[in-house]
Picture (cartoon, rainbow, N blue to C red):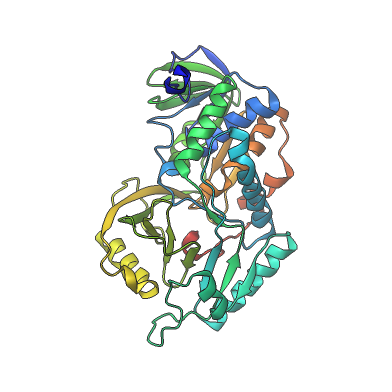
Length: 405
């Protein structure tokens, strides 16, 4: 009986860094932790260190807006994210940790005939990949989101239809981070928080040593999973990446009674809206156009996101904003990720995610773990190699999603 009240740690206490590791993963977010988890689970590689400059999940993994979906524009992107959603579906059971995954459905609103054409095109691409995605019209939109104002004769952006993606939904991001960290730790992986990487040393075309604020370690293989900071780490290895870093902002209202049980997104209105399990309305917009590492919010964001949210949900007029925040997004030229090997033999990257990274966490971990263990690039991530920018084989996801979500 007393065992019920015994406090248990989620993972082991942090120890001193060893002198060397088979694999060093830079970045303790969802991608780094997922890779560590699958390395020990599927390949038996346990001599792994995850290095995080602050606390795990303090970056993009803890600042995203928890939306999951796979209704992307390209066949390569749709198949990749569909594999990730399927892994998410079984991840709570696999980790023995409730991730609070709600597949409530995802609506991408269309406000013109041209937008409806784009939605129909995306639905066809999705169906070719076996993904549940279809175009619907105002009557069905009303049934899915009865609280949303669909028939507004004075609307700036009238709703003429939507792309409906039933498998899409929301998940608790901090639970994903904690579950993956616990799973990796139980398999023998070492998690080192407050461990900032300050340099990488190269010898004969390989990264051989990783310098940190807690000492230097030798590394067999090194993975860069640092999202908005990815160019800084890659520069240390002598691997320039075609990436720019921007901020993305979001905010939540005070908790309210349940009104919305589907994710609503609009590209023309630059807004996406969902309601959390605590009752808060979660709202976000597009990335800011300037490049920066300064995660500071702006008044303009709050004004615009409030204005467009009220056009769809006028009943929120008197709701109070509870808090707002910003996170870093690493954007590639074609809005698709850069995944896998680089010109440095043992230095691999997971970068260029923009606002899509959290959706892909499990499949990134699974495929990067396979790459590290076998030395072969999995077919699923081959289209996202950095060489595509030199070979003119872009995988353009630009405009594949409303406000990048």
